[in-house]
Image 1 (cartoon, rainbow, N blue to C red):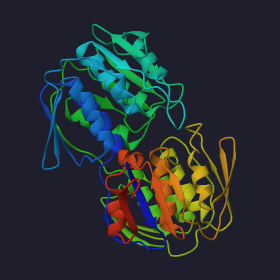
Image 2: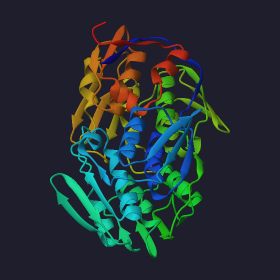
Image 3: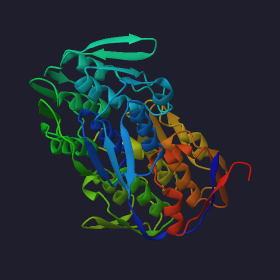
Image 4: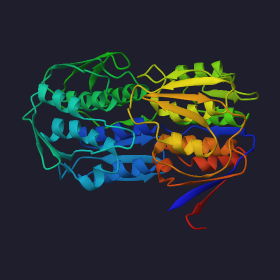
Length: 419
């Protein structure tokens, strides 16, 4: 098992290219199930989660190959409608195959995802939506079994905003008979990217990026070619890296127009952010000011940036409050940051952070994807050496982050546990 060893204190300077979006790639891979023929996907990041969704699809009979960075996905011969527990348990996003399978194959058997380190993420809204579209749903021995002769359009209002629920039902509705209306739909850029991909395949989707999405079902879809949008969470993480190291970084292929809430808070904290086209220069040349943050569904401040921002606020001047409204258990990284000298108190879903002059290197353990990123950021800023174990969490969602940081001047290396 790998770990990262970071000697902090280096100022990051230089250019970094933002990789393709993990949270766009996963539903788009799943959407390939909706049609025969080969879809070609560009700008797919090389991540553990991409390997996992690939295993799920291959288990269903899908052919996947990579040619010069282009993923070619052919679901012509789906030979199986089951996504087993052994695969689904490693990545909750595997549930995204449910909607496409029911829509095209008329049936699906998908393992329930189970628990999650950052809190419960129930799929009841996915199932209620499919039932409203005419699917018969049974829960048996830890599996969702869904059947439908052909899904029918319906008006579905989500009780709470759900990204994967919106994506699952939007995919299912593309082949349903009649019109489906999704109300209180997620507005994330990744939902829009999925809708754009589906429309290229011949779907008829309107309103993606708003709270109401309308899908007019069609008889069939055709394969297409698509380029995945850049990853706004990776871009935000690199911006924070500039802040904690008082660095000067230029991000290439940066989705600035998807990051207004994050950029606003970073500027409020005293960082200089200067976009020009799809490039942005980020400068953190002074002590960070404390600012308060409350996570919200898009276009609000993303929960996936909360842990990284907490590291930034740990080094700020003054008192800040971070309120987590999306997941009830997403402060697991706090204990590890405290080991490095951060002054953080937790009250319910709120973290109260008193900024300190500096952090100290320590041995810490990653507990989930974004928590691991927050520890890397802390290690970059800390005095001394930080060792981060269980970095396979980091590899789930960041393409070669240690290599990108090293290129910017970080003293960071990947070693095997025990070395």
